[in-house]
Amino acid sequence: MAYSGFFQFENREDGVYLKAVAEDMSNMPPIDCLIAYCDKKNIPYNDKFNLKKSAEKAIEGEAVRISAVQVTPFAGFAEYSFGEDGMSLAVTLYPPIAGMPDMSMDEMEKDIANYKVTFGVDREAIQRLINSKIYYEQTLIAAGAPPIDGYDAELTYEFNTTISTKPHINEDGTVDFHKLDLINKVSEGDVVARIRPEDPGTAGTNIYGEPIKPKKVYKKSFKYAKNLKVSDNGLELISMITGHVYLEGDKIFVSGEYDIKADVDNSTGDIDYDGNVRIRGAIRAGFKVRASGNVVVDGIVEGAEVTAGGDIILQRGIHGMNKGVLTAGGNIAANFIENAIARSGGDIETDAILHSKVSAHGNILVDGRNGLMVGGSIRAGKTIQAKIIGSQMETATEIGVGNDPEVVARIRELKKLISKAGQDKEMLSQMLTLLRKKRETEGSLNEEKTQLLQKTMKNVILLESSLKEMKTEYAELNEKVSETDDARIKITRTIYPGVRIEIYDSIYFIRDKNDYCQYVRKEGEIKRINL
Figure 1: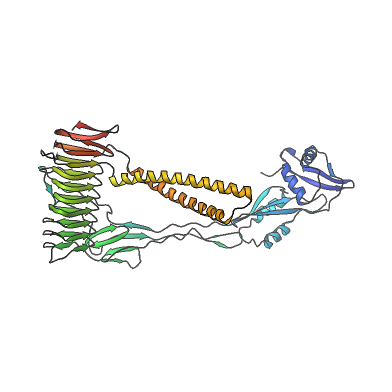
Figure 2: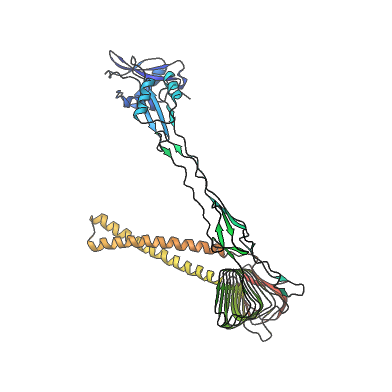
């Protein structure tokens, strides 16, 4: 809203006078505007207080002398203000000394041309500003056109990228490994992924007529292995074979199943395959099988190593001979696990675990026809369930649920390291304070003390960086070890003495035979409750 009037100076025989020009004096410019006006044209005044008093009298209709010395007459003028981003120009118009002309439209347009402003000039606003004598108030007279941002390209998959399938359990407790759906089936010519292309957006223009680029957008490209091709327009990824499709990281694979109709032994050597592997025979001791997808074995696994990015399905089981190792990114399902190591990123389901070291991020279910778990060490992130745990011979058996023990150990280690680093930092800070105080007191430090100061400052910086990294890791790990009610051990028949139970960081030894129960942690202690 424009001011209703303005202040103007007038030269008279006995000096410079201030007067107010307005029909309505209720909305005059503030004193700060008047002070700025005086300073721009070197109009003398005693002080701000007296100038304010003079302005108040002028508003009452009285012309007030503020200086006994006349000033050089001046015409109306303007002050220009540019936006930092080159997208705007504003002007503040000031009145002339009485008797001199106002600033004209032509003069302002020449100023604008001299500033090389060529785009977005609002000539109607300029004309209105001059015609209406809108003084002391900043008015926008030129504005650029901002750019219109586009959007990044988007990659979408035409298949399920998070398959997680468990084997079917029959009513009699046996596991039917034939009823599995582990593959994203794809036919030759099928589109497995699409790209919505990026929109680059529209450039803008600043008040100098220069283009302003929109925000940078990012393209997308397919990352893929063999058996795939990109369409002519570059927006579709097409399977060249009939098989299965899956995602590993951000790379797309299409593969036919590698079907081995014999034992894995000297006739085949080790197996390393990007896809699913089906072995119709056994895996003999000393050999290795690795698949980025799933591994299904019809025969027995001896003292061999089997590694799968997905699931491991053993139709019979593993006689590990204390050498066998199963490692799955997904689930493990086996008829039995004996004298072996088994690690699963998902769940483990089997009919028996005998004298083995077994761990799963999810659940361990030993609940088939026998449902036996005896000897060794068994650890699950959530639940362990079995019919029988331990034996009448009180075989030493360790069972644990809850947090990954390696994570817990790392948290404890970090806690000590953070405490030690904090103490070291405090000691170094004290040394810095003493050296700086000595420098201030004596004016300078000798070469040895100067080097010590620089070395100490460097060590503080390195220590702070290390502390930050450790605290970040500590916080991230702590989020992973929060307790939930899911962590429990269920016994659907009997648990025998000799079993050591660990839930989170609590330990409990089974002293007596117990039937049909479960163990949970409540209020910091492991407690037995009935099923």
